[in-house]
Amino acid sequence: MAGYQMKRTARIALAPSVLLLIVGMIVPLATTLWLSFRFYNFMNPTLGGFAGLSNYEFFLTDPAFLQAIINTLLLVGGVLAITVIGGILLGLLFDQPMWGRGIARLLMIAPFFVMPTVSALVWKNMLMHPGYGLFAWIAMKLGLPPVEWLSNYPLLSIILIVAWQWLPFATLIFLTALQSLDHEQQEAARMDGAGPFDRFIYIILPHLGRAITVVILIETIFILAIFAEIFVTTSGGPGYASTNLPYLIYVQALMQFDVGAASAGAIIAVVLANIVAIFAIRLAGRNLTA
Amino acid sequence: MKHRRDVMVKAATTGLGWLVALLLFFPILWTVLTSFKTEVEAIAFPPAFWPEGWTLENYFQVQERSEYFSHFLNSVIISLGSTILGMIVAIPAAWSMAFQPGRGTRHVLMWMLSTKMMPAVGALVPIFLIFKSVGLLDNLVGITLILLIGNLPIMVWMLYTYFREIPSDILEAARMDGATTLKELVYVLLPMSLPGVASTMLLNIILAWNESFWTLSLTAVKAAPLTAFIASYSSPQGLFWAKLSAASTLAILPILVVGWISQKQLVRGLTFGAVK
Image 1 (tube, rainbow over the protein chains, first blue to last red):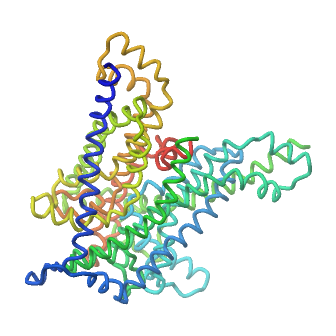
Image 2 (tube, chains in turn purple, blue):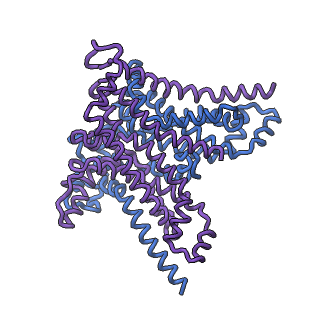
């Protein structure tokens, strides 16, 4: 009897969380799916009813769509390349004994806590501005013409800004993983004459395998959804040169008021994210049993 | 001889480490320094590194022109509100799954994780339409609620991994002594897992403070937190670098301190317990 009661209490304790997530996530997602098959446009209220696949057709054949998909993938790939490689190197560096290591580490991780709108605007105005920015001044000192970062290389600029925010995260994870490395094993390998490069390839890298997977998955989830950095720097431009999928959907819904097409785009974004999420959830599940 | 070589190596790594750390920190330092310059000095070219006159004028101006403090207060309300309300919902859930697991527990945990993986943009249109029809657009209650739900999976997961480290015998002993479930939670579980509970709260305050998708799309003026307020400086007529820097400095410093305090737990929370 007591066991039964306990089970009931446990279920009641769990209910509010499950209910909130259903109401706040699953119901809206289902509604998005439903809207994606409807004609629904704020600018043209007479249009309505079942749209079949025409919203998907509209979204998929929009030239901006292909560009947005490519940009989304380039953004994820570019940031991952910088932060994973850079993060491993920095993790190794900050794992070494040095004076004032604690403070150096604090300075290093600080960018991760800066809100996206601030970091994007600081980079846009004070660093990348072709007239008054610090990069322009450095270019001048080197005798080079200033680079118009955000108009000529908009996507690269956004990749740099986002990588600056996420490099500390990757470093922090790798640093945590490196601290559990078996130092006796390292010492033994050194005694056997393994050089630093061999030790890195055969001992350190395999040890970091799980951390690398985690960094790639978590960052991919967040970077697929990058929005604010684009919103305040380039507004997706010039043209669609720096528009990613979330930004395109936002524009479609809240600026062009085409709810149907935006919903179709949102469903496509969800499917894309799910492909990554499946791997992430498997990994977390394995960790749960381990 | 060997000792001297060690010192040299340490000096070299120290130099390199500090160089990298200062380079990464530089944009933040630059922002703080610029906030004490005059507008003319802020866009001086070649750039002036050190402020000439150390003025606090920008901080006063930001407050005077745009009611900065009300946006700051919105950020505090939204991040503390969504965290505290979230904990009230998440603690029982995590307790339930950690100490009374059933056959479905694993699936519930995985399902919660999967909702966090869903891009927010997938829910944007319906939430926007619903909020519009019930008057929750640009409303503190609305945005707090959305951030609560958005971070709930992380809270439950993090608490769950902390609770699992506590031996269930101790809770059972309390129960044998006649403690109700609520008492067991408040007087036994929470004090024992206080570090875990605290770091879960800190991480969520950070995430909510910096959240920039929902705050930009669902708030405008009245309920706009600092993320949305700072975004208003992106318009060409808002090109006041010293004031932008002052507003930014006040927006990032408090949360930077919270982040520094909780850096270790952050790894655990953001990786859903996969890296400790």
